[in-house]
Image: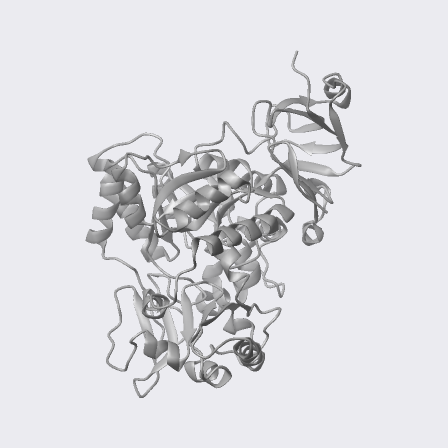
Length: 532
């Protein structure tokens, strides 16, 4: 009989395995789960060299799997100016923070910031190019909204990006202008590229440092797996950084990297399929973007937003182009992921998937939709029929709910219909979309089970999950998305020994108390990678 390298005992273990939902102890050998059971059963697997870790009555769950986040982007953002509402409650404070950063830099060097949200700022408006120019007149500045679908650039940055009063809007983007036709500095969705394209790209060592830094934060939140939704954008820069970080141990979060179409074309040309790689880093889906965000009012909707100019958002491609791109990736055998938030956009995505599947039926393709925010019942029926996997982001309701209610009012009750997905048998996972919002699982668990904004506003109780469902969505469902349900997602013999030890038992805690959740320990491959 095999003996255990490590035994975890003395607590409550929520396994997410229906064959044994709760246990007292776990034995680990060679980075895999050797056995799960009672304390007595597991202690019989000890030998003289076995290490015993006492849980002190706390609760262990499978390592959290953040189904959609941006680990690399988050690591890079940690080096920029923090403009999140908790740090930057006003434009006056924003200008102060940017001026402080400018004082530390040489003239002409780029200043970047992230996380601002006009709906939670004192002025109730977006900053402008003139605001940023006043703060840093001698430096190009670009700051990213919390949703990542809008940026504001100062006058120097706009000039470097070639944005003038005569610059036309790109497909799927908008240069916001004032009544005189002058750019305000606000660039929506694809229009961000004017400025982003002239910012110097980070070097490989910068990318590796960002991966390592973000991994430590993720581990401190109990996260052992994620899909990186930023998409691999550059084959000669990002891929070596990911691979070297994985090999050196810098990357301590199992990552499936969603690929931009250009990168996936090159990967496919080399004969590499999607979901190929190691247990630590894999080439995941090919990912397409199709619209913006609800808070930024750029998600493609069938009914207009309730805020002037009462538009219906935008889409990145016309139906014919989307159909062609989806069909090409589908025929090549690739798993596909598409960012879609508005109901009009979702209809287009489903139409493209339906056309590809009708022309070339594939079983168990597990094509995905990222966010799928406004999934009304007829859309869900089509998702079910197609066999899609869905990632949703309930923490948006908590952090961004105020702007969503302002934009779509009572329609917010239909946003992220996770309970309906569970009832229909549609695989649905929870993702934080970090750094758009915090990746701490307590926010996703709370929002999925309570559906209230940070100010306590109700966002539709009928779609609340039970805590058991929310935990499943944060563990097993994410593993299903990446064809790894046989490897991880539950505390089951034979699976990878990835665990999170919690300060409280979510199943015995009132929903409001989940916001007090702390991570005490995170284990990857049977090794402690974080301990409070």
